[in-house]
Image (cartoon, rainbow, N blue to C red; front, top):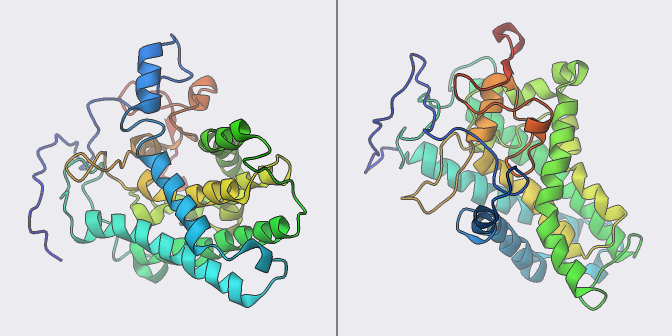
Length: 330
């Protein structure tokens, strides 16, 4: 579909059509040294920071899902197809709304053109690397298909456990401070856990048989976010297992699960954010470098684990981190 108002691409690019932002990839001023109090508070409470808009958006989505679309907890004491199918369809709507919406804006309508697109090329439409010979169709199959089922399976099992009071509950009355603290900690726990699981999937046997599938997307798009082997998808969502041990409310679990389910879309957008005239975050350069170079940037930009363990690459020519040989990328 033609773009009625294409954005001009005046970015300097290398011979492969690659572009990098002027600012190198880095870490937010939370756990980095030296401590910068003003910058830290600006990041925590300012636009484009920790709370707003991304985490707050996911929190609002999960809150709305809990109050308006979640089957009543008391009806989930048994595994029945009525409430299970309800949850599955709701999750599919979230996937198609979020992943499909970003893809529609960036890759179908092409409202940003190739401006601030890291790789000028569009997704492969004729490639034996992908199912159906098409990168987007392949990604949709793995993200909306396989990942959507695994996402729902986690939710169904945990809702059943909550309904039967088989895991510890936490209510506002029990501890309002801890209840609120959970919402703050969930994105941090997710990033910490993701780093270690991601490094595990780069262990040679797991990479060869499992993680290679995700790395077919050297030039990722939103649908690439959950385009993973089912084993990897199961590992990816397994950070929610903490709710088996630490008391929480189902709304905390839902926030964690839906955060996992939707966040990979903007993390794999292939564009440097913000987009839509600077109003929508789509910051993916940190993780884009992982898809480009493979053996770097396993985590995120909040907890500097990559810096601490020597796997950080900033995207500049002098950045640390080694690229995986071309022959190993398949």
